Amino acid sequence: MTTNFSVVGSGHVRVASESAPMRLGVWSGDERALDELIGIIRSAGIPVEADGDIRSGKWAKALLNIAVNPICALLAAPVGAAADENVRETVAGLIRETFAVAGAEGVHLPWASAGDYLAHLFTVQVPDFAAVYPSMYYDLQRGRRTEIDLLNGYVVRIGERHGIETPYNRCIAGLVRYAEAHPEPS
Image (cartoon, rainbow, N blue to C red):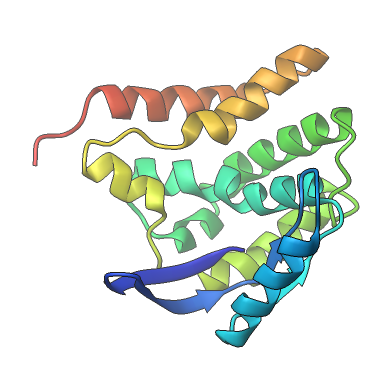
């Protein structure tokens, strides 16, 4: 699930916007607990669907984070900045590389091509979250480690395993790691 939420109090959050239903699945094992969890989440009014291929679902969800989180965190800008003409080519490069790596891993994404996903990104996801700052921005502002090694860094590592060059993801991951190691004084 890609969502914009804020913590209201202990154990309570407020969902401000979401771009798609939450998708849950079982990596391995018994699916009965999944059905029960989906029922609980639905009873809270949150759109949720079962996903029979959660591995591909995780890759699909990560695309937005790979494309916009590090760029917007480094620019100290909201998600809408990803649509700027000066930023779009970098976003497109990150996504093209990620699609190549996902394909080599046998992952089936819901979009036929990187171009199809980019159209979805710029017409649905970026507008939905345009005013939101990604969590990676807040991590950098607070001097915390980010999830860069689980996003763009992961694409680089898996790309290496398959002999796929990932210069956009490598560059962005390196820049975020630098920002983590050299926090700005507050």
